[in-house]
Image (cartoon, rainbow, N blue to C red; front, side, top):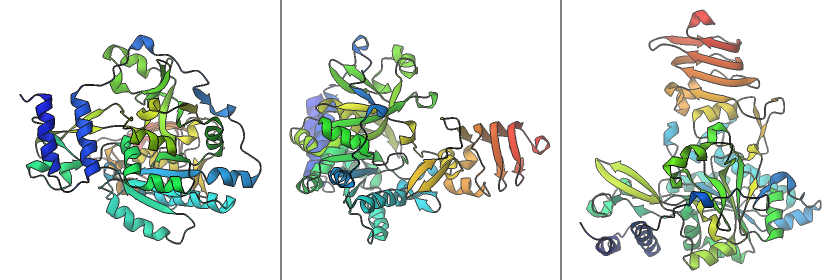
Length: 469
């Protein structure tokens, strides 16, 4: 077996011949693999973990209200840049192209809603908040075409690519493209922790600083709740916090999400992968770890420049094993949230659940397309008619997985204001104007087609066939 030193020198010479990527990508990749091989993975000593105080994870309702004067608000907003992570494809939902172009509601896509939101801010306050999209090589070409339709809007849109790294053959640590895999399968985007070096390497960071921008608000493009929040921006500028992670109270649906802890005097992210086996159940409990990371992050641009230039952002490495044409490969990734411990005066803010509304599956689309929400100026707003602060839990079977199948199975989206939970399994079709209340379970055997008639109200019902309707 080759030693780690031999692996790295072999890797360096192989990477040097990969003409598809830039010098900074080559260096970044070799550094990442070196760190991985040196085993510098940070092990957390369980006994040292402390629950963060309200100074470290600030309750949202204690934030000062924003300035009354619109001129002061304009000054605040002119320091801000919005960055959406746009590297993901819509494949899990059966769509081609970037996930951000899936239609969410009223024919508007994630990207449409984001642009409308920032446009209305710019219009209202006379400011110029730009939108940055971090694409991956998977989404870049499509995104460039898509954003042409916004060319007449009052919003500057910039795109840049996150790094493109070669997948590693697990056996011998040789880059997959060096073995003849020159198509897209040979490469991967190394997780959103790459946002910081990519912002710098693309030249966008220096350009933004020269325009007087101070903070970037980073969020996943599929989180409909991640809208600009003036109270948060105001708080960070006043208190000189270089980094802020929005967290929100954990429910049983979020047990795997990373949480913030105080550790050796610093605030840091604790992910399930770092938790020793004997403590996993404790990590998942809602009693001890009450909050989780929404991946809405606010970061000071000068601090990003300082830390990237010093090569100080050494986030935990997440090894992601995959298989390409029967070859076992390894992708090494990092997460942006893990960077929190490197920034000065970093905090969490415990925000309302409404700031976390991700659309990961068609069951989430059902929620946001229903009467539970409305869209005003691009903002997705929850219907006050629902008394329960939690959303209904929705489980749809594989027949609903792809967006196209999901849409074809509902003549119109049911009313779910009073729904607690819905489970659907099998070949089920919904007529128009159906109302679901309480706990509804619909499960039909394979080979049976069930049509829910137009206009019915189903309340606390278990349905296994037409006879139960």
